[in-house]
Image (cartoon, rainbow, N blue to C red):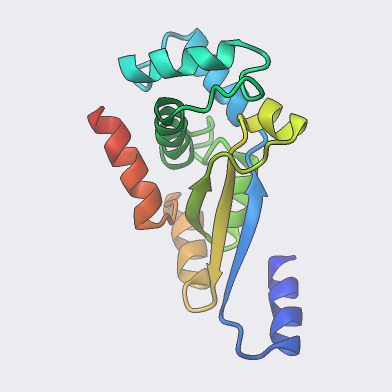
Length: 167
């Protein structure tokens, strides 16, 4: 599907070389709630715990509970979710990530808040991500993901994980 869309776009505009999606994260809330219920399993820091308390209010977003601490916690935990959290088969737990990474994309950016619709807040606490398809890298990223389970990710995303692991 992605290759078909890319080919169609290139046919209309041959100078295009890079393509980026804005994608949902439909299972992030469920994953984070499970991690919180399990006590954090070495994933959630004390600072995260304090910041995440805002999410316990069902109307958290509408009440302005969008502090810097909450953003820092959610972005760091999202980086962990995308880069380290695995399904039993060893692949990323996120189905949208599996689709894009399997098609040769790179996880480019984690956006918060990105989807402030009721559904977006319910499924992902408002997170959305960009996947980048660079024609010069698609095959290499696809092969690395298919053969070794390597998640291609930008420095910006990897730095969110490193910052979170230091906290």
